[in-house]
Length: 358
Image (cartoon, rainbow, N blue to C red):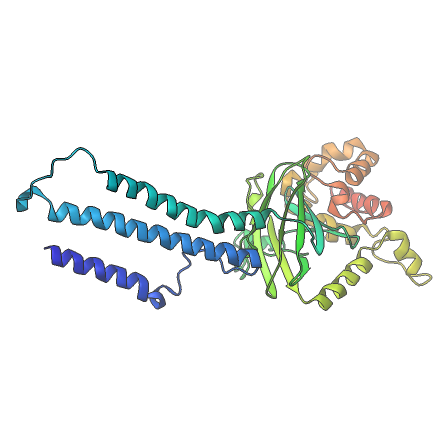
């Protein structure tokens, strides 16, 4: 019986150690890491996990052998003694040594995780219900990042895409090999900025600035989500970080500066007689900035064309609605999250929505 149990135990352990190909399709571990710190944490996690496995095997192995070999039914008689100094020293010293061995690399990783000094790039991230705003402080670039998964997919009217609920209209772009310091806060409730494959997670708390950092070591797009329950649309608040070569990053920054240039600069640079969509085209402004919330009723926004929902608002007068749209109201951020909108654009978009509700 003892031999049979030992053979089965050995077979199970052999399967655990050499049968890795059979487990290749299973994701029972951390995500693959693409940052220096992430790889350190992954290795530390793996080492400590195996230490724990071996402790489990050794301790429960001794217990199993003791139960089988020293049971009363085989005629074993229990020894009678009160204490054993050597054993007591061993079971105190050995765990202390194991804990120290684990604590040294863990402490180094923890200190490295909190060291946000000497960054190559600083990005302020602000969480809102239910979107993110990115400010590249050294570059003078800022934009909102919203979920881009279509409502048809969410409502089951269309097949779900590869990155369902993990795709955005404006990803955070960073150069690989550069230390990025992330300053985090929130404009309404507590959020948490979490990108597992970059080993970065930090709460965003209204009224406080928290910080963390990462350094992407590989090209690619890395996806995450808000990790703090922040309201009914919590699951629709994804994060995408795109790591690109330095030259592509510089090119992207130039494009963003041109795209989000102040309205007066854009007007000055435009050819004489040109009329851009942003010069009071209410429908175009609505489709670009307002549609995400008002077309679906997201965050309790009155749906476009819903006379019952818009009736009390229309009764307040357009001047009040202009002010709400410009300065923000309840869960709606100022200018609908597009801080580059001119006042004429705001009034045109409000007029367009009011007209559709009459």
